[in-house]
Each structure stands twice: as C-alpha cells, then as structure tokens.
Length: 410
Image 1 (cartoon, rainbow, N blue to C red):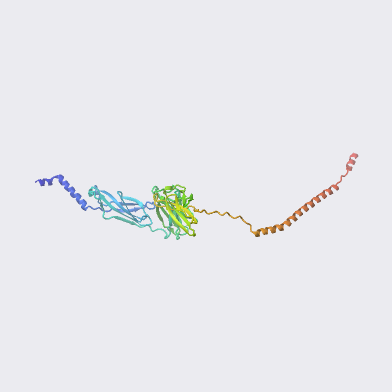
Image 2 (cartoon, one colour; image 1 turned 90 degrees about the vertical axis):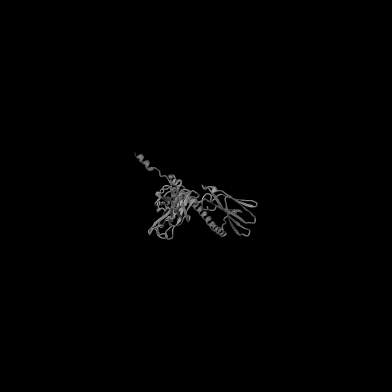
C-alpha cells in the first residue's frame, strides 16, 4: 500500500517524467545543419558576407542555445580557418581569384541537452568558383606595395607580355572604414602607361587589412582582374643609413652608425652589416652579420690589407610580421682610400714647338705693320702741312674800290 502511494505521488511522477525526458534528449537528440548558405560580394574587393538559415525544428527547443561553427578555406594562409558565432552571418576576406569554400555546422547546448554540447553530424557546404572573365593572360605580374620609410606608400606592378596595345589599367582599394572602394589618387606612369600608384601617408591606415584590385580594359575586351590583401605596416622599407663611422683600435675595428631619419622607430629596427675583407694575399672575403644594436666590433689584424663595412636595416619581428630591407649605406674602409691629387695639365711638346714657329713667323709681319702705320701717319701729317701752307699763300684781299666810288657818286 505504501509503494502504491509512493508511485501515485504527483511530485514523484513529475520528477520521473522529467528524468525520462532529459534522458531521451541526451541519448537520442540530434540536430540538422543550417540551410540556404550563400556568399554575397558587396563590392569590397574580397570582403565577402556569408549568410545561412537555421535548421528546421529549432523552434521547439526554446531551452537550447544555438550557435554555429563556420569553417572557410583561407587561401592567404593555405589552410582552413574556423569561427563560432551565434549570428547567422559572418564577414571575412577571400582571394577572389580562387575558389570560395565554406561550410557551417549547428551547435546545441543548454538545459535541453543536459548542458552537453551537440554538434550536427553533417554540415552545409558551398563552393563558389571565381568568375572566368577577361582576356586570357592579361593579369598583372609582381604586384607589390612598399611603405617608404613610413612616409608614403607606393604600389607597382608589371604588365603582362600578352597585354593588348592601347590597354588601360585601374587600381582600386578598400579597407574597413571606407563605405565603398576608391580609385588610385595618383598613378605612376612609364612611357605613358600606368605601372603603379602613389599614396600619401594618410591614405592607407596601419593595422588594418587593405584590399587591392587591378583591372582594366582593352580593345579586345576587359583585362583579367588581380586581387590582393595586405597590412601596410608589414610593407615598411626604412631609409638608408647616412651616418656611418669606423674606429680603429690596436686589435679591433668598431663600426658605428645612427638610425635613419624619419618616423620609423629605432627600437623596431634590426641591422645587417656587410664586412668585406682583403687578405694579405689579395683574396677577398665577405661576411654578413645580423645585429640588434647600432655598432659592431670585429678583430683587427695588421696583416689584412683592407676592411670595408656597410649596413642596412629592416623592421624586426617584434613590431611587424615582415618588411623590406633598406638600401645599403655608403661604405667605410680602413685604410681609407687615399685621394690622389690630379696631375697638373701639361701642354704637349709639339704644341709648344708649333706655337714658337708661328710666333717667329708673325713677329716680322707685326714689325712691318707697325713701321707701315708710322710712315703712313707721317705722310698724312706732311700732306696736311703743305695743304695749309698752300691755302694761306693763295689767299688775298680785294680792295673795296667799287664801294668807294658809289659812295662818292651820291
């Protein structure tokens, strides 16, 4: 009788029902993968929107928390990347010149699963091929961007040998704070053809993915499009070092230098020193040494004929993921190259002889000309005297006779 009463107790019955229900959920509950997955290109040069719909039957599981496990193939890293989100969309970067591959699972967790995470056995997958448009073989080659001394960015490319004549190429860029993609503000030309783009310092931000697209048109049709994405702080090329000094000790050589001028932080630089040495037998040897400081000491032997040094710098791994080496500095050597004074200009002997002969021939002519001029002046002077004398002797005064007579007649 007691046992029957215990089984008919309402609270006990409710507990048994709950336990049975939870046990059934834990043992046999499954969930379907999402539905209607799609990838949308909003015109951000590779930043695509992945969207999907929840699986059917989730409306009856109000006590469950639903999340999604998204996997996509990252062509830049050549591996799969994964992310979990409670939303039904996700935005990420793709290389539009390659296939877009994504797949999504459904995850359930919470009281409905006895706080045990359940993952859908299958996934919803989408593979989207790149558009096959553009004249074959007309995509650009060797696209590269360099952040010159962190002052301005220059992107350049090489034209394809199959590029049709009278083709026009365009560069567009986009990053997260831009609503729409923009065109290159200042193209670089070579023989009237676009080969690159210059950006001012404020045009491209640091620590942000920047998407680039180079397309174009030609008389034969549209050109193949090239897409790429990079962070500008990983493209820094420091300026060359200008101040380099070499100190010579009794048993060592110490080369010292200063950071290049500009906004590149000195603590972010690593250095490479090139040491060229000429041995006593005239044989040359070269050594490249990586250092973190702005000085390097090397043992010195008086038997070596010559030691020369030059340096260059690059952003280190503690500040950026990668970068470019600067140009080499000027070279300093020991012993210093002696400046040989230029020899005075010497007139060839044959020119001196020729000048002497010409002078000897010209001297009599000059003397004759002087004498001739003097004689000519004396003759002119004598003729002038004679003329004056003749004029004076032939002049006489006629008496005013007729005038007197006339006066008398009156």
